[in-house]
Length: 136
Image (cartoon, rainbow, N blue to C red; front, side, top):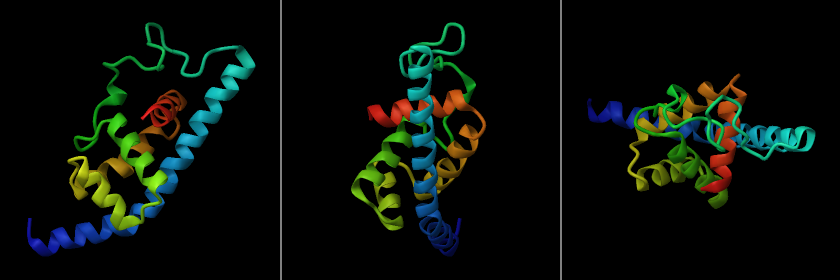
């Protein structure tokens, strides 16, 4: 990959980062609200396992929905997203934060678009993410 292509990719990541952070925060808030609603409505503990044999986190470790995206697993995605939101990082800071965890800018771009897309329409996965976001 040429140097100019890398710069272009980095510019694209930086430009998209604020929207990615906002989307991750919205997904987390929705997941946490859903978990709270389930607990209030049904007396279930937050993170209740919906699938048979699922652990308290809701999704079994071998579930294919937890397959890392560009080498970034859901826990790492939650960790970086939470750090970015807590530290009020701008787009450049988000990329640097991801890199500080060993995630390249390109891998972060793929993960930051892939995880929200995977969670969209999958409430169980979104709740699992919300639980991780709260724990990391």
